[in-house]
Structure formats: structure tokens, C-alpha cells
View 1 (spheres, one colour):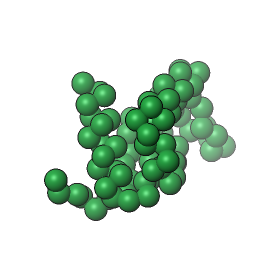
View 2 (cartoon, one colour; view 1 turned 135 degrees about the vertical axis):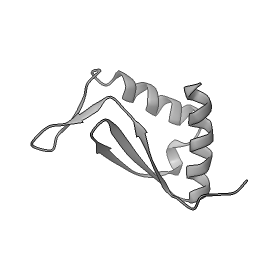
View 3 (cartoon, one colour; view 1 turned 60 degrees about the vertical axis):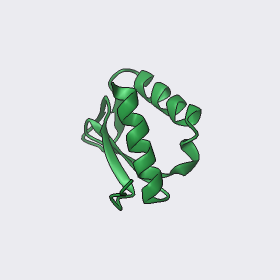
View 4 (cartoon, helix red, strand yellow; view 1 turned 30 degrees about the vertical axis):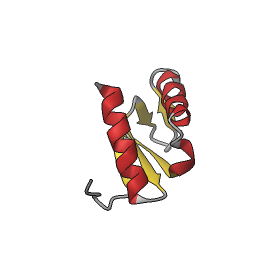
Length: 80
């Protein structure tokens, strides 16, 4: 498998950023609880080195590019 070399990825999330830069979950945090539980169940939570809230997305940074590739493959199969 060829790695892209990227250590971060942006995924869609039901989140918005207010004018004073506060992140607000539009579904009362249900998506976040489900997503972070999924990360833990797949043993990917220890491979995350950073998380950034954006408008309608979150940016996840991983320790290595291989970890990012593994997350991308598992997350794509979760979406189907």
C-alpha cells in the first residue's frame, strides 16, 4: 500500500464555530461521542496527536502518515 505522506485529514462533522471562536456541536455532541467511541473501539485514539475544530469539519492529526492512512481506510468502511 502506498502512503500519501499526510499526517492529517479533515472529515465532515456537525460543528460550527461562533463569532467568538467557540466550537458548538449542532447535534448536542451525539456525533462526537459516537466518533470518539469508535476511535477507542478501533484502537486509533492513541495514534491521534491533535484535533482542530473547523466549520462543519474537524481536522485530525496523527503521529505518523501510516496511522493517518489506516484511519482513512477504516473510516471509509465505516461510512459505507
